[in-house]
Image (cartoon, rainbow, N blue to C red; front, side, top):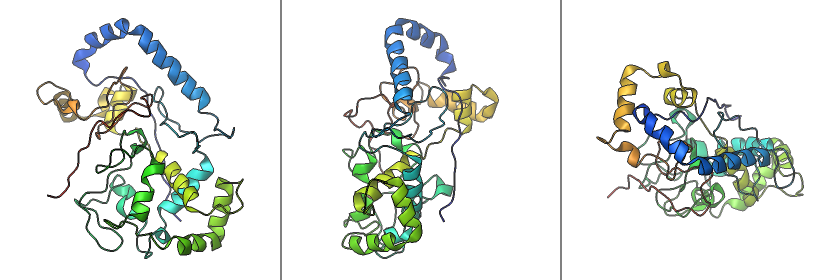
Length: 298
């Protein structure tokens, strides 16, 4: 059985740049119409987020107050059942062509859903030109890969590691019929697929596997770091003095770290994400990718 894991929460809208507090307050008063518009949009998201396109109850995010849920495609509604199915598939080595790797091989929970390597290694032993990205809060990103920023949803990206041949990742190309038939014979999976896709007679197929994996990936959110506790909860004691000094440097004009490691068009400090390539949940779906950092060899 795959391991269980959880999410935590805090409070939102505590700006880390304390020295700019007066300026921030002035900007708030100068932009009240836009702020109220965004607050109304957040309220609508909360109301609409309680039901899927089919009228089903959606996944309970339990996010910090003021933090919007990640955008979910209207044709891929998120439910507990789909997240649970996706969690099983994520840790199942049968989803690779030779049965040696799972998604979790390159995205290990204990390593922030990376593999700890400078360069990833596929199921056939082939070394990749890039490292495996962390999956934490990936649902908030503009682009999901370093190599192809046009992949903006998990549903678009997941078939790449499943079926790619240059380089081979899971190596499922040419093995799909065998693998899906094996999953369909599994008593546990039969029940999981039936619960996740109750309207289908034969639910074990690639589109549903992709949707289930995408649902699980969207559920990997975390706001429990000391910085999150300070930023969202206003807990000054959450970070040691050295971390406060580092934070001041990070957001200073001296280092300008935040110039790259920060979401674009951020209003009221919504959507700040320090992994690069981040966005606010209210940004347009067709918004261009912001960051494309990578460690490509050569």
